[in-house]
Length: 186
Length: 398
Image 1 (tube, rainbow over the protein chains, first blue to last red):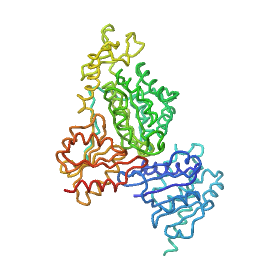
Image 2: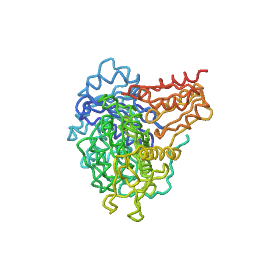
Image 3: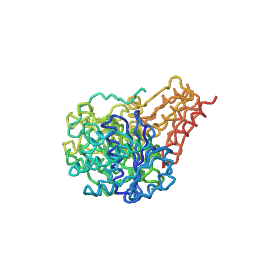
Image 4: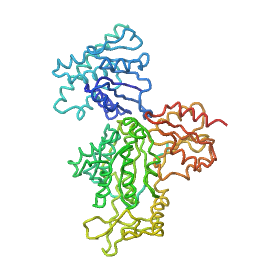
């Protein structure tokens, strides 16, 4: 059972992230996924969040009660949602846009230069896919194969290859990070 | 868990494959409503945007060019519902969606649709009221309005889905019921289910059973648009087929002509009520779990029933015998079922996202035989499972 919150500002593809992950889980990993999102003016430029529950059994309560994973791609999103993240939860932030407070020791913090990576790949709009690849690698909440299978139809056809590249870039970075952390422990 | 979802209709045909998006989808409830309508053969949709139902209209508009359908955005909700009634008499299967304020505006025309015995489907993606209220937040506050909101006596059918999958499934049932009983059928969903993405499986067209309109085929001069017998329903014709028929929202006779007497009104209203009441056992569907040896039964519907299940599971872990009765059909109300339950249990807990609406029906049917405890809310958010658990524990006390 995973409770995952994606957050940022409108236009960063926050809802798309949750949609892709949910579709990957429900249609290609054969588990249950329930995704909800914030509506109204905030979805068009203000703080924006989307929630995903992943479970082996039918999801009953559709919202996060104690998110185990928080993805925050803006400072406002971090400030708003970080206090709600469970102790020991996974926090993924955009390295260049979010300044984490020092006392963020209670959670497992990952920061990733997603926008920078995306720009290197040719378009800052791919940042959300970089984040998704990274998230997939560090949490293993969903298989990378399922994530890639979920992309057609949820990203524009002409950017499919570029989005897969962005996902792989993030995934690789996440895998490296995970092995580095594992090395540090042992 | 016993599934009371399946309903049998006497004469059905397979769905037209053109409108059926067979496959597995990760889809929200609003989109599933539109796909259900297309699968059921609905090809006309007059709508008006209102949060949180607009996605259904958008989806239908997007799909129309692919399936030979027509979407028209009308100037307001009154126009949208009225155009739909007109389109039914022009031979189409129709649906529209709306939410609180739009639902209020449509009320007069719901009465017209009931009086003219017009088959149609209307979904209300409920949001928090009164007035503009909380447009983007969930509620189940229109449950009595759908039953009583238009003036005069009539009956409607209302179904409540608890997931995007059920949005799809119940819209097809709703069309079938509306064609069977020539009555508007309402899908009383809510913002949470409407905006929630989950897996929706759309079966192959041949596995979707559709009740076609019961077209009249006899001699033209014998055609009567109405038959006020309280059980069966007169067949329909459509404008342009040479029947030169008339219908009106006034009290009318079998020919559809105004007949403005108390006697005629008694016949008409009795029929409108009885055609639903006398067939209630064929219409009503519930989902039940653990009712047989329960001390407490939780009655709930739609999104609230999912939250209730979590509370029920926790209560069972602490040793309370608690059953679940989920209303899939809220109107007509499952009176017999509630009476039977009330005989056997200590308490019925009713969890709904309003200040106490369907609980009034439960209290009426329980008639003092057991305690009835409401878990109510003023909308805006779903229940906390703890609130329902507390009510179950309260009800389990001797």
